[in-house]
Length: 217
Ligand code: MD6
Ligand code: FE
Image 1: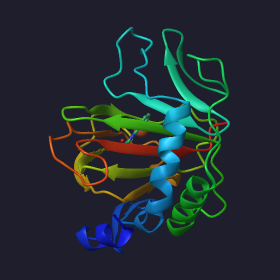
Image 2: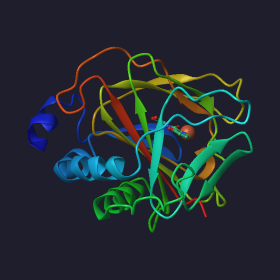
Image 3: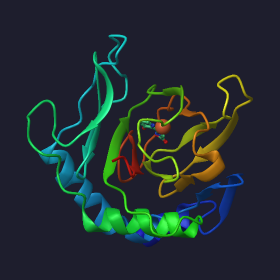
């Protein structure tokens, strides 16, 4: 399997879909790095397995997650927070692979956010039926820093809303290799993922993997 195969498969690779004045989807932006990204992801997950966290309300999250980098996003009955260790093992999160850092900073720069240096990478795994309800990413300290979100595997519909939860929501398809970046005036817009359909992907089987890079601390 090579990246070129996927590049040919991507309906929009190389184009940009504008979401808002400071938010875009860079179509296929991660494809050129896929041969490095995928094995590095496997190494991270081997060190810090995906797990279902529990929300402050006591609900088990349907999408299992893990992290790499100095800080990791966690949820517990006590609330959402970033911490430097895996709550299940007490060990530091795996280091952020260099290729992850490079992808995040190159995508951010392409979207108009030069100098982005993430300290957290939250990794989610979606299986058929998994979804993420509309929310804002607001556990980070500095909202001047963008969010960079990479999609791998089966495609999904990104729900892209406004600053108010009740604002109208657009549905934007996200394909393998797409990188969404939102910051500036769009940083606190609501977003989510519609239930993922049962489909097969050559690299991931029936899974969608998403990583979001943040400057959290
Ligand atoms: C996505 N993920 O899966 C978007 N936000 O395409 C998120 O918006 C997200 O996965 C906060 C925490 C985990 C996430
Ligand atoms: Fe989010």
